[in-house]
Length: 103
Image (tube, rainbow, N blue to C red; front, side, top):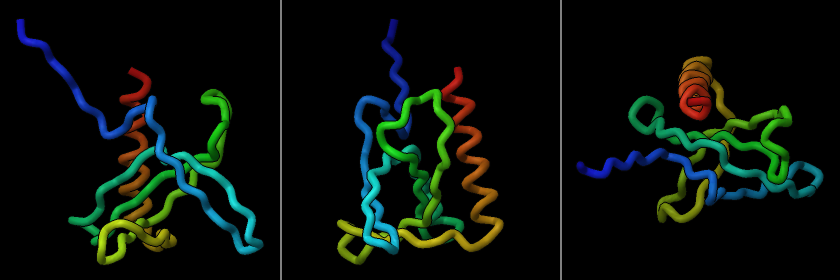
């Protein structure tokens, strides 16, 4: 019998972190929950973030940003999401992701 493996876009054992700096200069560490490829539709990618170190059963406010890489592809900028179409797409991908997590 052949062994079957299934790869997800996420891996709970290896969380990626990002530090956001607010307008007052305070740094907050976030974990990347999900990355979404929106290149085809919107010409940019998106990330969903949640505060690092928060227990899984605690409600948290997710942050969503458009992620635009620089020309070298090694760094990028987070930009506000401006259109309802982008929000709808992100919400749809997030709901699918959550449904898969519950299985």
